[in-house]
Image 1 (tube, rainbow, N blue to C red):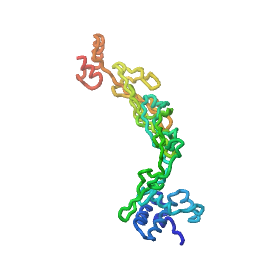
Image 2 (cartoon, rainbow, N blue to C red):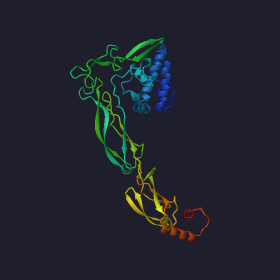
Image 3 (cartoon, rainbow, N blue to C red):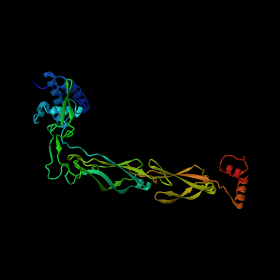
Image 4 (tube, helix red, strand yellow):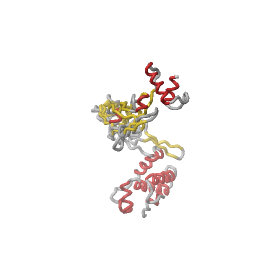
Length: 363
């Protein structure tokens, strides 16, 4: 009997995504699974046909060869056996309808998170830090097997006879459940390793030096690939995510890549202008204050801010001026301010502006 087109079997177009193929297969598998249609040869054949189609279209390499050469492009494969279909089905539906466990399959290790507090300047310019990571690693005594050295390792589980599954009938359905004795692995440890208790893993602390790039901000994460916990049964390591907490600065406030600070100047500096000392992350700088500067005016210093995290260059520094009116005056200062008030004109007491406030304070 000539095989039908796999896309036709699943009822999807040739350009269908993997997610579309998966949804179509789930629908067909639920409809035609033998446990739902006991004794139906037609349903069994359709279930196998759908499983075979999905097995090809869900594999990028097989799908590419099938798209180019059709069924002839897959002849180099050994083909499908009836035992392959429950695994495909089990990948989507778990233990239901006889989905099998894959035994001691490789499992990726857990990702870890480490919280690190750094200074404001370290976040701006970057730094390196040495940290200690608590993580799971393969037991060095049993080499990850979980069995005590010299005891023969693992043996077949008696309860499930090495299948990793036990079967329970519920009505017309035969339900499969993970074997509680071997936890689906099909094998058990008769003599567990004393160091790791049969888990094959032990908790250790490892020192690592991490590079923190310039421009990071509070709440950013630095990812260290492969520095998480070790995987089970030879699986790859997880990753380590370092969550950064940046300490507040006494002078500067950060807004994205820009910095803001407040500098106090006196009345004479505000009125006459002149040079004042401005703080920057590289040290103090002398900056000219324009004559007639009002409280709240600001000055922009380009490229004195934070290094951009994902592109070159730096943000800017915005200096906000605050004009301070003296609360106490000497006799000479009071006399001079009164003369200044007369020169400026009496005006309206309490009028607008800095000198209006001065006149009000001297009366």
